[in-house]
View 1 (cartoon, rainbow, N blue to C red):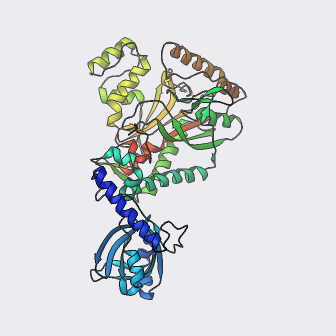
View 2: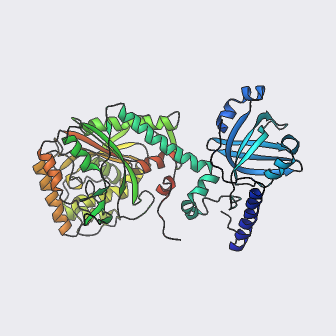
View 3: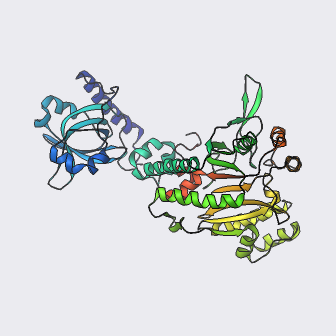
Length: 491
């Protein structure tokens, strides 16, 4: 965005304030209560033939994005949420007094326009004024050009200007809304019940992460912003709500990078009497359905790579994926061997990290960036997944999968552990890890174990990162590009 000096900006604002006062002196309320909009611009374009032929009176409202005066006439463009159209105003059509009022409007002001449609000599569809109404007088000038790539921080800080000046940015967030609604419809049609679970929790759980802490003054207790809604949703399975889902805001007090942000949106769903193989099939079907809602052929381009959601997804185990990329079979290797192998692969791993964590580090470094096409990686080491069910045939593994694409994971799913005694043992092991300094280890949730003791049905569970999925489907380079108002350091 081209920055004016502070002094120059104040002069421009003062000039606009003077026009604002002139409107008021002329008896015009520059900030009226409402306007009776009859059409949106998109409908004018699609219904052009009938509207121009019959000279139907149309009424639209939007922001003036361009104006060029020619004595007694003015051409310009007005834009609403659906599109942009040219307008044309003649002094002889609306009278001298109204024309003077119109001259007090500028680019950036919001107006209602009433008129008839025609095509100009240059064949541009245009609204010819019959009347207009001032709806909001802007006091700051719009930027002449919005240099999003050169001024990324300002785009995030002033998202309202970014949206105002950049139709592609508006499209990203409209697509995001369509993604959420498509997933919601998909689950509703399959008998899932949408629910809400607490954001403020007395214990945080459902993921390995550091929480944000707050204090409830009335109860005089510390609470945590949820890091996941998993444990509450599984309590609902115990209570007989056999298929549930939630779109949740989750919070993790962690660093910020291209795919991580402390405040993010998850969709989690759980179904009794299903396992992770059922959910692999469901995720493939659901995301194919979502992709086709966003693009006609179910294909999108991300960073130059075509992602085809319509094909059967590749499926590979965690250890097979490691072997395919590194040439090394890590099954059965102990901590010393894995650490030594990581050094040979020139992967920097802190000495003393648990075996499974080192394997995950190697996977993240070598395998994950290569998973460009939609891929399921499944059957993970047990130590990485304290809430997942033991693998039914492979000792030391759990029934877990993650969907990957364009070099990062977009979800996580399990056959859910429903043995309360085993769950208690795993929580206790996590507590020992916390005592050794692992701040992201799970805490013991005694109430969750108590709920399981009433009997939790066999179930599958899934979490999908809405922000990351939106990144893929809108070709957005950073997670902050798909968050309307990402948190920033103070100006």
